[in-house]
Length: 267
Image 1 (cartoon, helix red, strand yellow):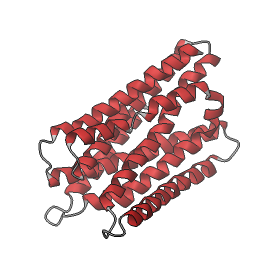
Image 2 (tube, rainbow, N blue to C red):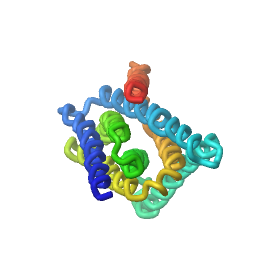
Image 3 (cartoon, rainbow, N blue to C red):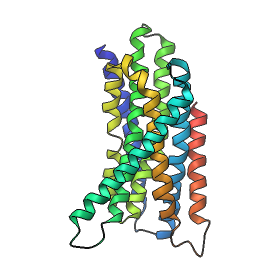
Image 4 (cartoon, helix red, strand yellow):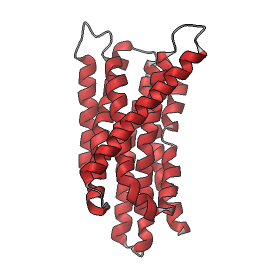
């Protein structure tokens, strides 16, 4: 069992490392270019929308159909709505808290609210992905370390790791767009993936219990990501686009296409 936990930890540290590599792309911006950053902000939104289905909702539905006594459509719908409501409630709480703290200074800092929601949504998305890797390796204890089962667990880890590259950029680049330094943008971008090793170890240790709630957790994360992408990222990237109205929109399309390509290619 200890070997399985260590394997899950190593695998999820690898997925976090790829997240850090994606976040490191922010280093290529020597100075903030509003037009380019709007394009990349749209790219981040496209990545999040595609990941919500192919990385989260589709696996949630498949796992619920295979193992859950509750209808898969009900699990996915309830989880999705709970995730969206959670992010909406979090935004309201953050806005209310900051408005009370800044009541003597005027309007609350909307920029900080967007940043908090972005980081929170990506972090929530990484938790069920880490659990999925942990469950895959934890299941090896029931298969006597067969080569097929081991390769299946490794494939899941590699697939999630490759998907994490654009997701790391989806955090760091919007932070740069909001005026943060490259160093701080990278730090916060890679930090969003640190929950995966923790979740991976938990998934390996509690494989029998985590596997039953994983479909709901995946759907929950999808709802959170969709709300942030539609409510925050897309409106923000479309600002100041009078001269080139489709520039940021093509970023959304490109981000969606890249994430879809990765997910479908990796199965």
